[in-house]
Length: 112
Image (cartoon, rainbow, N blue to C red; front, side, top):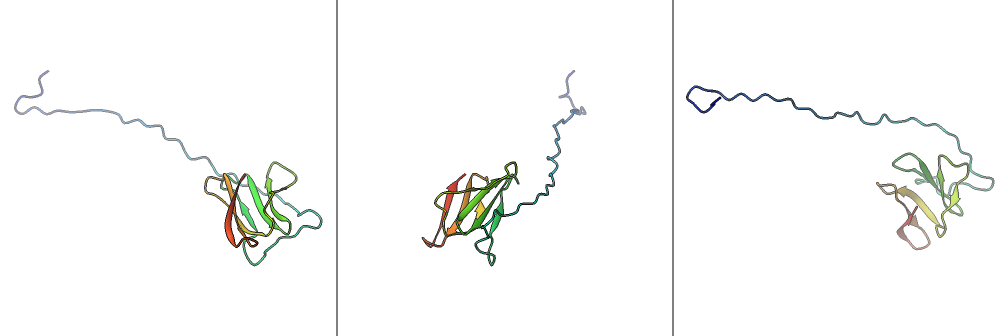
């Protein structure tokens, strides 16, 4: 069939198909965590706790340094070399923990 003649129209029919996938439904989690005996938050005037972007870990500043805890673990572990750390936070990709070092008066980071 020749569609180039006068008065002819070209009709294109097509179906646009794309895979629509709904975003993963956010999961609500609730848990309780008591600081171990003798531990207390370092700086309650600032941010003493941060939650990772994926919601799977928390980091908090205590007198001994920063503690990192996975929600799947019962205990937090001390991140070595983080004495005098305050204002903990996670990098956007969750691979780093950042903090302000009072001892060095600078921003630092630690790979998880």
